[in-house]
Image 1 (tube, rainbow, N blue to C red):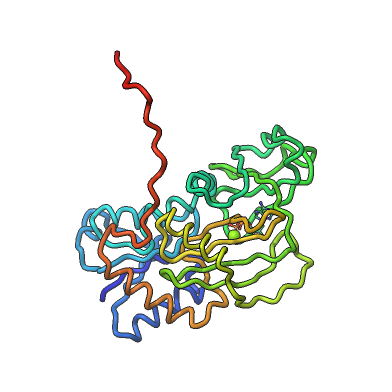
Image 2 (cartoon, rainbow, N blue to C red):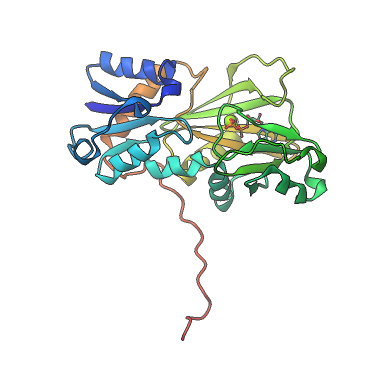
Length: 291
Ligand SMILES: Nc1ncnc2c1ncn2[C@@H]1O[C@H](COP(=O)(O)OP(=O)(O)O)[C@@H](O)[C@H]1O
Ligand SMILES: [Mg+2]
């Protein structure tokens, strides 16, 4: 096969996707690499040439890669993950609405451009977790204990939204569940909001309940290679984050598994979501509107 990987600067030296690219090459496939942050892209010709079986994206939120992947999909190229699925999770405000619409266990979520607006959230919902809607890797995620901590000096992103959610009381251990095209793995990692807690990163058994929630999340968004962050709160598992093409850290033989999955997904053809999004409930007016 001939694949094209879009690799943003942040991941240029990362095992994921560098080792996946090397593995695919070792298996005899051709992998071209585009660095969206460091390339001149001849848009009028390159994307219509059709000389790749699929384009694969490992981007950073807000990076230039997603636009290119969308452009490739627009010309009929197969993409891994599907571009609509990536759009849905890259913006945490949008992801919260999609997840809730599909009945997934996600926290109540508010959005605002300035952190001070969150002072209007009922006090009973504090403490809050405030994070940038386009964030990742725990960047700028913080615990806000009371409305007084929401000062005008809070750093809001220059563009885009912040989101706030009630803090889900938890032990300080995140369950990070990964799906490699339907094969699920659970791992434990320390929550960045509990820096003092000692947590050994490791693979752990996956309960049927969390497996079901993970599969439903993939189906709701149409994701194939993804991960979710789960916290165990007083009412059971809560999904606090959804990521396309995550690190797959601690997944056994992650490189070989992800590489094989990329090939399978590349073969399925354009626009064919293996995990078809569930239909959204449609509100139909009771009476036709007659003017
Ligand atoms: N509502 C919440 N309640 C408690 N802890 C949270 C909540 N949201 C996030 N966290 C903690 O903060 C971490 C980072 O937040 P997350 O939403 O995963 O953003 P990021 O994209 O930066 O990974 C999570 O892994 C979790 O440990
Ligand atoms: Mg996360």
